[in-house]
Image (tube, rainbow, N blue to C red):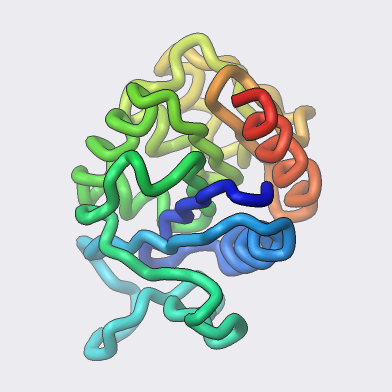
Length: 190
C-alpha cells in the first residue's frame, strides 16, 4: 500500500475496531490516511465537542494515533483526486450515511471515478442505497442480505472477503485480516 491514499468514512457510531485496525494497518503499510467526517443526522450521545464517536466510545480525532500521522477532513470537501480507495466501517455509520443522503452522492461519484469502494459488516447498506451493488458479489453482516439482494447483488454469508471489480467487501471484525488483504489485492490490480 506504499504511496496509496486511503479515505476512511468516519461517521457517527462507526464500529470502532473496523475503523481503528484498518487505519493502523494502512499506516503500517505506508499508505496516507484521511478520515472523512460528515454531520450525523442523529447522535446517540450528547454533542458539544467537535468529535465523531464510535459505537464503543473511540473518537475521531483518534486518541490512539497522533494526528500528525493522518488527516481529518469533512467528506463534503474531499475531491476524487485525494484518494485511491475509500473504506466504510460498519455499525451505525452506514445507517447515518443513508440518513444524511450526501454521502450517497459521494459514493456514486467515487464509483463513477472507478475508485475502490471497500466496505465491511453493515457497510454494504449505503452501497445498496446508492444503487451501486447490482451484479456485485458481496460479503457482510447478515442484516445486509436483504438490501444487497433487493438491489441486485449476490450476498453470501460464507465469504470472509470478496473483490468484485472496484468493490471490496468484508464480513465482520474477525475477518478484518482477510478484508485488508482483499483491499490490497484490489489496489495492486488498479
